[in-house]
Image (cartoon, rainbow, N blue to C red; front, side, top):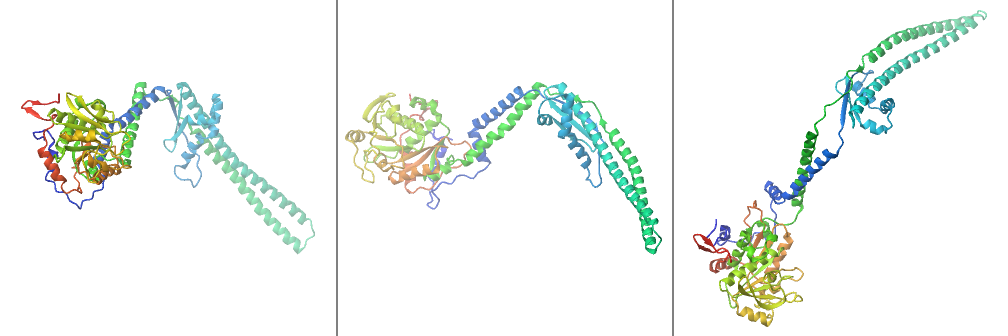
Length: 560
């Protein structure tokens, strides 16, 4: 909504706003919410989009540069070797570990005649237990032929090594029984020798008792030997059957074959999409974390609380690269709004000229262009204007072609203006108006120029190390211009306090680069009870700005 002067309707909503002294004047950042994240992602979309694009490029590069990998697989049917007391699934897990052992890998390498490192060969294949009896060996190499031959060699060497393990286990058991039988025979022979010796001795009760004990031991030894011999015969038959079963029922189900390869185009697409999927959350995470960690203010309410004054105007982002001067400002809708607002914000004239000081809290370019555009606009209306530039480098004065120290009359954009630039050594230049702190009068040329002027517009940057006591000599009202995302709460608060300490009424703040998603009003209590009255008076009495004046049903002045 716009009124007849093309100012946003929200400017006029503050006229009847009642300020509450009990509201806190310090800054309070908005609650983190989905809206906060959306605004941060929208504001810095070029960051996360660039990172996502980098991820896609990396994925594409990997797909293009990585060598083609061929995979061959073969399946083995095995009868696992098991022992009593093992958990379910342990036998096939043991078989998988054997197939992946360094011993089997070395046997396969020797069979293939390979001279590469054992670790690299182990890394080239995997063994997976598909069921409790089926193993699958997969080999990845840079050559399809090598993949097939390596898989077949691994399967063959694994089965042979496993057969040797089973046979060795059987032999160990039988050898153990043989050793026990030999020991039992030796023990029986020793008892038989003692029986013969005792029998040859003269008969006596002691001799008979000893002989009876020896015969009893002989009988026990004979029974033990018989049991061992039977166990050997039974074990030999049983283990032979078990061994044959394990060996004969374990074999390669199918010869190794190559797994169908993805097409190169499909591989490039997959890697590119993977790069996008990886880069997108990384980029968004960087933006969100940066927004959470940043102490820079963006919301109208946050800026108003820090400044201690309402934000009565906020506009979108203004691209300073394409903003070279008033001619460009006339074509920029956001700058036109700032110029129109400054025109309405000029306090009414008292003894001396009407005056306003614009305080850039951070970026000085947009405030300088807006101030110069306002000066030209008023000069075209016949108002005698003095532009004072108290900033380092005199950005506003340079737009008018007069950046050197001194007071001089310049002709620019079809009008005549008086431009005042203080000496660089004058860190707190005294103004032509008497401030509350009874500052001394300014230099005679400046005082004379302001005495003959109708409007004094000043651009000033405040330094916390120097303070702003000199502002009272330059204006009877101040507007602070803040660029969203460039100043911390402490910096904005310091600017507001310096303006108030100088005795200059802080009319309001102007926010440049506000987010479209910002729904806060930018209202805040102010220490000066009459500020709303001053603002209302200025809005109702100031002449219209030439950038936004309707010339009739079909026209608007463009500023020439």
